[in-house]
Image 1 (tube, rainbow, N blue to C red):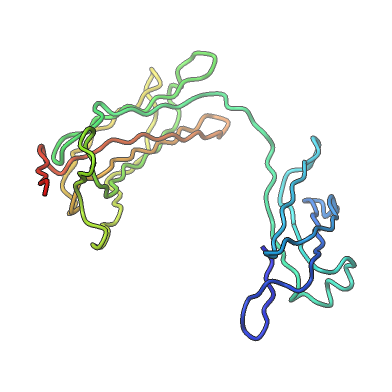
Image 2: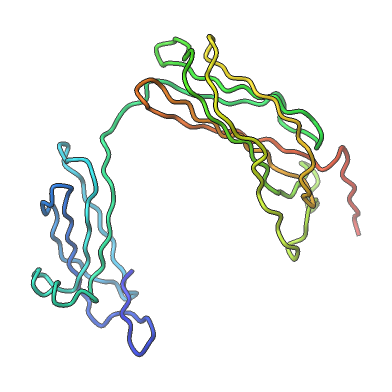
Length: 227
């Protein structure tokens, strides 16, 4: 989206064309293309990187001027950005996370298992694992009870997400890591969504992350009134 500042306001530019320049991490120009702006002052562009394209940061520049001399004379009229190109590296292993229940009640104990295994079948014994256990406020709507929801109203201030546990360790001989956490009250007005995120890193420093969620109910019962 392109906008031009006139009299202190951002407006659709009068010019209908723009030049796009992309330079790779070796400072080589790999794209130079003129595009036509839509009536809304926007454009869409896609291009394909070469199979042997170098990795690293690439620079992209948008300007109404084609020549580099004119672009340098009018730096206020150009936009500069960047993106990163990485070498593709296929995964050598997979990671799973599971909790012992699909839902809990505050004050319950949550037990979870993090497991890493190589794609050729071996367990990831001794590899590094890190995790974060977080509670996010949520509204609960029971299945089969359309129109009922339990939790703070839209007019109330939202509770803040809370990190309740984090840590690091190593997978055991079977490629598993076990953790247990008591789900104490954190002051939410309603129920919560429990989110467990785990990252496993192998000897080559390749890391794979995954997550799972479960509902933590405010209590064992919900009481609703139909008016």
